[in-house]
Image 1 (cartoon, helix red, strand yellow):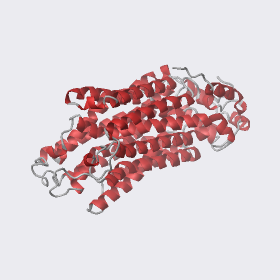
Image 2: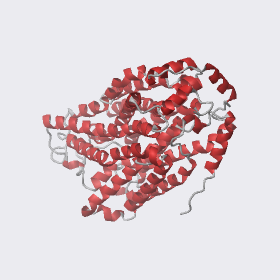
Image 3: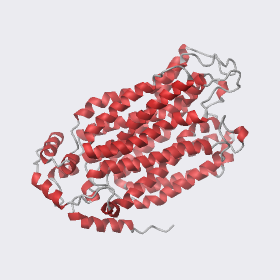
Image 4: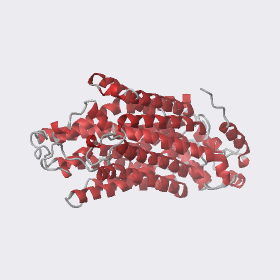
Length: 539
């Protein structure tokens, strides 16, 4: 046992994998399940909202959301998430992980339900209330990122910590899947009960009045999984690392963890005091922090930022890709509910075949291969597949080559999830000191969400056809899908380079990583500086 390591923390570090680890994964993971459901289910219903609220009599194509409304509806939750990550990340270090954890969950439940209720009937009022509640829903979801990661990393043992944090994140895959499957069920049920002709046969009749319930039900069901785990979240004790290292309450930490680990742990108040005296208490904006963790924070923020640009832009022009390759027929050949069904089916297939397996590959290999190798490998293959989609793009648009396109597209996703999408979430929860851990994770995650906003909106406009006449209604001409894919390839290549700033935390205790055990961290200095000058293999 490292000299200076508290017994209670050491007990957690060397604990065998046991039941409480799994309950922690489920409790933290259900939050993530809900996050993914709530963030991704909106893309299933945007076309439906267009048909219901922006129908133009006599138009040959069904109504669609105007660009600014579409951007707002799709993106307002991201803006909320970004704010929530920063705010709740900071609060989690101030008040404790557990206190804040219940707040974020309550916010998610209330706003999920409210986002399905509208005040007024005009398109403007419906969209305004939808956007208002989606912002606050995002705010709650944002809090879940730093808190879930930090709680899981502080509960885990050092041998399988990576897998546990990644497992929490992997619940996102199931959330996306659940969103798709639920939308399929609801749209099929409504379709069976209220059948309607396609748009080209009867423009007005193709959207049945009951369709207005469909999107509301899909959005509101997001409240269920969050509400179900609320009780368990409240029963979970505060993490020992927060109680001992930040709140300095040795007795409480020992008694909490004795219950969790079902063994006797002695409280060591003198040791905590002694550690407290020896330890430098630098803040986030201090020179000391910049010296020790500056490059790490730069590494975690830039890689997450770059990854999310690529990751979210794909998710958003997924619908267009499906239409282009013919998985989803032209809008006018379907009625409203049919369209929801087809979009949901396509997204569910992609999630099932590439998204979900990618996450679990990370869970399986992260403690064997390490975070660093998985992230490098992921960025590398994402770059390769992006360029492979972009350079012969015209080749992929032919009918006969559709399947090849979908395979390549799925592989890009697979390596995002068996790669940087998972590791950028894991690492910030491991490498910073306990009193700044949740804040630094929040900053890294918020940087990622900024990337998501760039990816989602930048590419909404960029991917438009170069010919204004062929661009979607209301959009200016863009650079086309092919060039957009080239830009994304370059972004992934940058992510590959910035990965070299991030240290490897495989198999080390959290205190060892953050240098919280050493006297003013002299040894850690050496370790970190040797890391930052690690030789980069020349290709």
